[in-house]
Image (cartoon, rainbow, N blue to C red; front, side, top):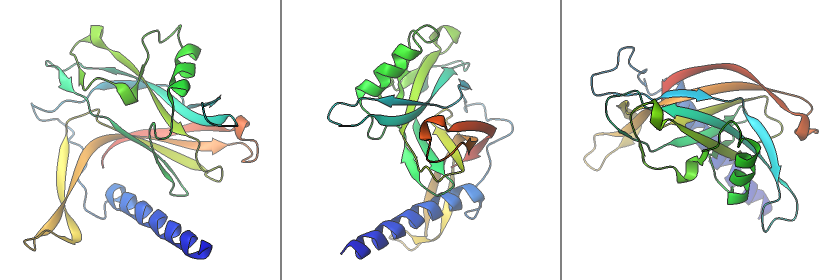
Length: 220
């Protein structure tokens, strides 16, 4: 039973990894974001912090739990208020995929907010963000994006931040068909990818450091 369970987990893991690589590596012939946006397309101006780790006494847990987070500052410089439906994931080079704010508690955000209260007095949790960002610098928002701790064997991670733009694209799935026999559709969003290398002994998690390796906009 245990062997079968591990085999199922392994299959699900590689299926998820393959799906992400297909989208990000171009096997689906995924388009790239437009160099010159169309008149009705917008992208928020975003500034982000270096990822940091934090340990928290989460209610209901016996031991302290480790989390990672970044703070993004988003400004809507477009001439209208824009909808905001973020979707953020952390992916390791071991193909572990962790959605943001999964398994986190209010205690985690509250400790982060307290840590940064001087610089970000109006810090918000991305999990409970309003679904709209008003235009203008006066309506700039600061959000904390939080992930549970990831695979200590990982050497690099990528953060994928979607919802910062309304640019989308549709490509055909190479194998799946719809009920009419036509190629299935894959819907992509303009997504900010942040890449980091991980330093430090995996056995000394508290000393782990992340080194920024670059950013790029992709359709994912």
